[in-house]
View 1 (cartoon, rainbow, N blue to C red):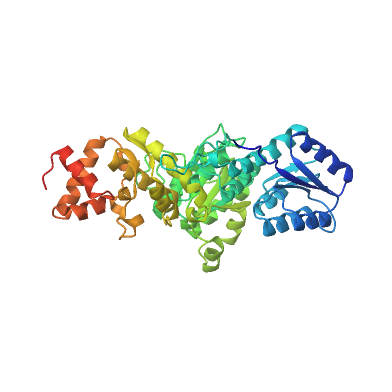
View 2: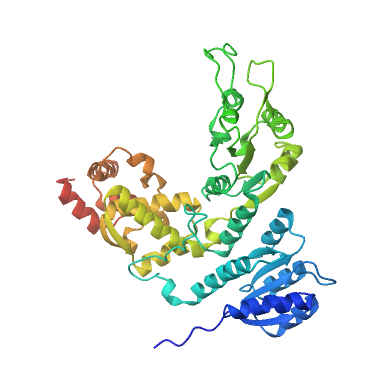
Length: 464
């Protein structure tokens, strides 16, 4: 029989004793175990002798302020969640606090409902991490994701991801430009779409453009549009992506690939809210929020002369860095389960889950291609297994430690319009021909066991 859960411990720090007492009373009424400190110095001293699950601290105190408390708490007690409170709330302060590791941010005068909601949300996360029943990393299922109504399309609950989403919540309602950095495949566009969806522009267009996917000769027309006769083939006037996004959001992916000349024209949009279509003589006014992303280091590109410093600072009202998947491994089981279920729905397969050994190998793999690679690997494994549990025998070569064969992976785009049986048969015949009937090599290239390959050969009547 399970004993009662230990209460979540909270340290309240405020240099106004009445405020500290009021907040403590509210939290005690919600079942928290509360300790108070009436200065930043006393708070740090209390933290030095006793760990707490949550610290709720006033921001403006002297000489030790809330940011000092936050930094000390995160440095010495990484598991402690910190919520900052201030009567001088602003988006800038909130963003700075979240970047430093704060779990949330409250403004005075405090509202009872807001305190309950935000402290309660952090407490539920802590209780969930304590409860082994919330971790289903056994034979049948990977770990289940926490549901977050604000971000239904984003899977994960690592601290790194939660901090990003907290920043998104703060900046989304504002007109501030956002620069999203991170490696390929980390989900930068998902972050941009979440910002748009939580913004006042949510009912207007979200328009995405990959600057690295277009040749230099067409990107200006694609962005700014053109008038009839502006160049050979311009048979009619056409709006560009910026006009499509008017009153909404424009997401420029791989902004670092844009030429310096195009950067000058984009700077005009940010500074003056105007565009000049190719071949036009007059400017058009536009009202668009620009979100940008890059897989490069912007400061390095500025130093090399590849990126304008003035544009960088215009785009980086707030900068959000999305870490590589290997740096937030606790999200991997959630993503594996998510993409397994998605693949089952799309392919009509009946794969039940991952064995513990298989899951362990997947979690500990480096994932150089990040979430995009993980999705493709899971899709391929589900496709080839068809049913039952996924075991280490179903893993592709790059995860088993053999030479990587990325061409053996099947993406969802490749699958579109083809039946499951046709895809399987095509892949098997292709590799049988390539490896001259060598079943071991065929199985290795497909990322399946020889036993599974033998079953598939019989199923499709293939005699190598």
